[in-house]
Length: 200
Ligand code: GRF
Image 1: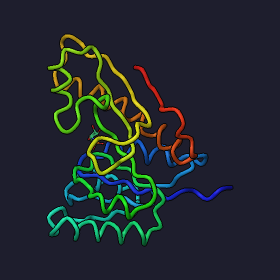
Image 2: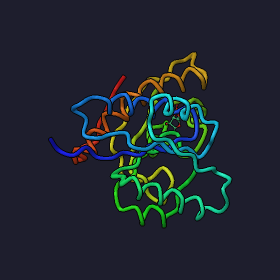
Image 3: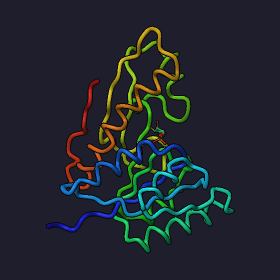
C-alpha cells in the first residue's frame, strides 16, 4: 500500500472542520493521515478535541513576537514532522508570501462564502445583505493574496427569507464539513482537475 501523506491542520478556534477532516482520515482507505495539529491559540476548543484523540498537538502562540518568529516556529514543526500538505481550518493568522514560497507543497483553506464573492470576515452578514438566494463555502489553494488561489471545490446552500447570520452560518458549516474532506481526498490523490461542486 502507498505511503499515507502527512497532513497538518492549522486552527484558531472551534475546529469543527478539523474534526471532519480527522474523522475521514481515520478510514483505512484515506490517502492521508492527521499527523500534526497546530493552533495559534492555547484556548482553542479544537485543541481539546485533538489532544483527547491523541493527536500530536502544538501551540505556537499568536503573540509570540513578530510574524517571522511565528513562521519560523511553524516552518520548524512542518519540517520536523515531514508534512506533505497543510490544511487551514478556521486559522485566523495570515501567512506571508515568504512562508508560502518556502513551503513547496500545497496549502489549502476553507472559506465560508462562494468565492470570489465575500472575501474576508463577516461573510454571512455580507451574503444576507446582498439579497442573493445562494450562499456557501469554498476550498481553495492558499496564495499570498487572501482568499484568492485556485478553487478546488464549492458547496452551495439556499438563503431563506427568515435566515439570520446564525442560521445561515450553521447551514454553511454543515456543508463545509462535507466539502472539505472530499476536497482533501482529491488533492492528496492528485485529482485536482475539476473543482468539486456540492449543492444542498
Ligand atoms: C469556518 O466557517 C471556516 O470556513 C472559516 O472559519 C470557520 C471555522 O470554523 N475559515 P471551525 O473552527 O472549523 O468550526
